[in-house]
Amino acid sequence: MASDDANSIIGQYQYLWGKQGNFRSLWNVAAQFCMPAWDSFIGEFADGVNRNTRIFDSTAVIANERFAACMEAMLTPRAQVWEKSKPDDEELDDVPSVAKYMDTVTKIRFAARTAITACTSMRCSGIPCATARSRSPNSCGR
Image 1 (tube, rainbow, N blue to C red):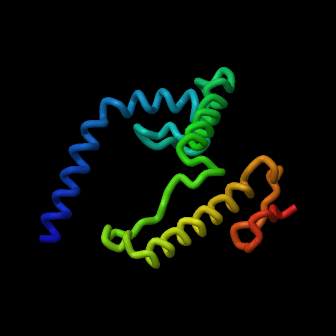
Image 2 (tube, rainbow, N blue to C red; image 1 turned 90 degrees about the vertical axis):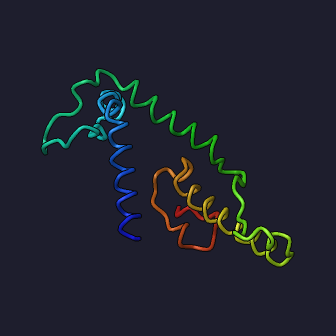
């Protein structure tokens, strides 16, 4: 039975790999303009190969970084709880002690995430810090 499951997963992987074959070359060309270090959809490059031949200015690279930052800010806002911990069993959701515990877990996860993002934000000026290891969410290693 486990062999059937593994064969099913391998078959599905091969099917999906074949379906995206037409897009791999397109993704590779796009990556050569905006992410030259990641343009290995088709194959691997030898060490020392100049992969920046298609970049004439930094417009696409900068636009890609700004787009990623905007998407992150919209999907996972730093100052807002955007996810909530819930038990797998829906009946436990009605138990007050479980609901309180899940709210506490959500708050702990949010505090940990905001402590880490505060460390990587612009106000740190790139100075590495140990906020994730410390208990003080406002310390930034300055």
